[in-house]
Image (tube, rainbow, N blue to C red; front, side, top):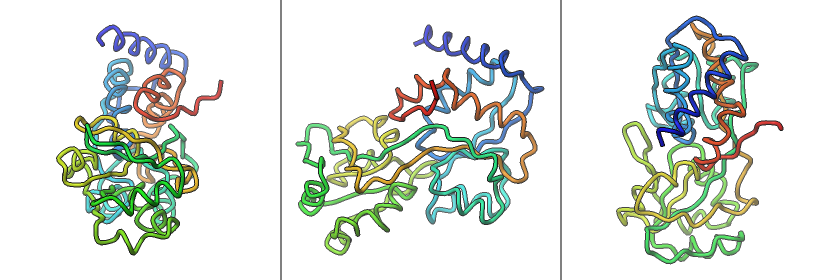
Length: 263
């Protein structure tokens, strides 16, 4: 692990020397959970190589939580850059909270389903199989962010079962004050749970069944944008460029996401 961290630090150094480093700055980052593991692994190396200091605030990309990124920015919390599920970007652009032209794609994402470790893995390989699995499940959990908002407002309706499963479905408040959906499933408080795969794979006590069928899964990307009132645009852009670079691709893959680096 230490050897791998050293190699990644060298990769950051090479990246910095190749692109040119701005003077050291405090970068205020507002980030949602799906890309957080990639960010938390690469961030320290970026800080060490550049001299920049990252100040992190966490919250869902969308939803009604007061900790959600749109809510935080709307009430005036400061940030230089946001890293979030792309589904929340339109609101931020419409309310002039971010610079639309600064949007940078970081990784492609998909959401999947987990069951408690040791339990049978139901079939969700087709739309019909997923429908039958959800109708048979005793309880269902989904996130209060992008994937859960989509499922509760569109996905379950597309399956034609929104009314049938409403009484046994539960929205889970995510970090920072809440927890991953998988934690609820691991405790046996829900039979199945849905969230971004990058969030499901880091929770012990569950097994990932798979991703939901493409017909129920819209294209999803984690993106970075500068806020309208950013005070450190150059440093923020350097961070986003590194997080979307070829050097970051192995970490993105390890964390259940798909890199978007053009070969």
